[in-house]
Image (cartoon, rainbow, N blue to C red; front, side, top):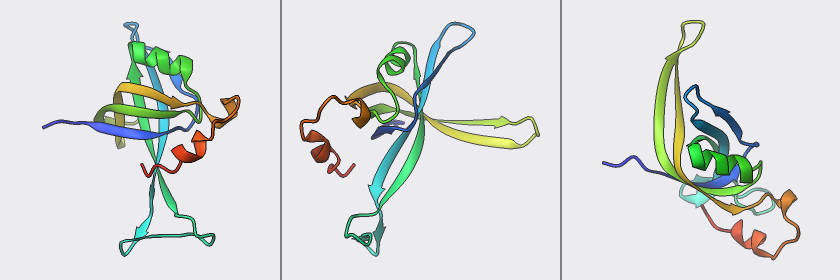
Length: 134
């Protein structure tokens, strides 16, 4: 069996980087994905007739070369394709409460589009790209 995560979304805030004690470069970022909301098998529409979208947030972690590239080239709003695996963790916090977490360990992060604020002119593709139902 394989543990594979495939995500396409926008970075929610600027990536954060650090180095471990042994020198491993680690970069993390939050990734927003969305999907249409359905009720009784039909898409839910807002008052203007537009599809209502549900947004989910994912924590993504990159290491070494991939971490450096994300740190250097990505910022809030960048559209990315992430291929990786799910990693679950468990720990006890300072108040002795058991906590659980899930993150995506990225094997590949492909940069698809810069944030709209960073684009120096549009080609009309932005509107087309946002129509893709991922």
